[in-house]
Length: 439
Image (tube, one colour):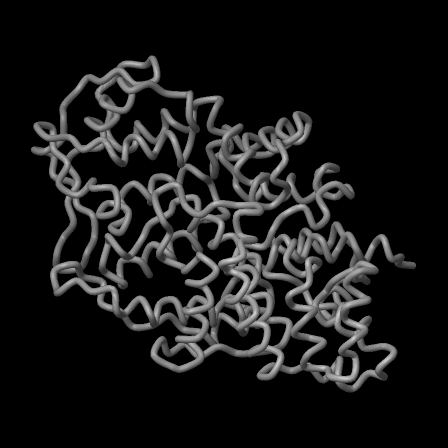
């Protein structure tokens, strides 16, 4: 026997682990219950090819070299493809997770300038984003797009570049205050010697360009290379606490992570330490602990996050069953790029290495027109039959169900009551409602 509380809790989980959740998706998950729905997230992630949405959205064919003429134009196809993939998948956790890591390891095509390398990074984040963080971090260090983005390509013992060393600690693994400027300079030496092969854009190690050491980093002295430096970073107590806080910020709440939640997530992350297949940096265990933590399932986190623009746009497309084209030159693709640009978040183009902001910064008056444009287009293009076919007296409730909302406030309901006779207008206003702008 399920209750309204059960339905609200599962809706909360599906919204946070996907891009919104329609009433139909919530209804389908309800019989299994909350815990089984959580476990289904990770079971599906184990075999992403089983999702028909993946098969229907093959990645664009982009050159993987970095020896040709650089250009950002193929990024249009890249953006269109990822929007199509996020919209098409049946189980969106893998794409939501990839979107999270794209913000964490923020890399912009505006500097990289090779769409094929950006696609390769996107695939790496998708493939490794639920395994050991050690494996993901190690791959990011030699990811070609990241190497170009943070000037690691060509860093030598005689001319070490500090960008990747700094961000690997500040933004990727430890956080501000858990390293010194001396640590940055010494870590830069540990990361020297890596090159990109122009023929296929892969990372190659040139031993002659690598600093021989020893270096003293984070209080420990050794002749470090990329692998031992990665080991050192993940051995720091700050690493687990940093990743716990980052996951809470993006999936839990803008409010500070509760101490008990932080400890639960740290313990889960470190739970596999010493196991043959893991090193105590289990990202799936961390995510499972988050989604089952009392602070996440409690009422304080419901609708506590403002939707980021990509979440909002993809959620609209999914709810109204609009399939965006994977051709970046198509008219609808251009419209969606314009909307995302107006909202302030275009995939593959973060503003800086810190990624995009969160919270109420997305609710600007400048972005309001972009939301209006999207809502009007979607309401006149998408499938709103669930609302149009309902009796006028039931259309507001039907709109809430279509969009996966528990209910509209009395104030929103009063505004929607004025347009119940015009279903497209009703859906458009529902998409612009305060209830739909938060997650």
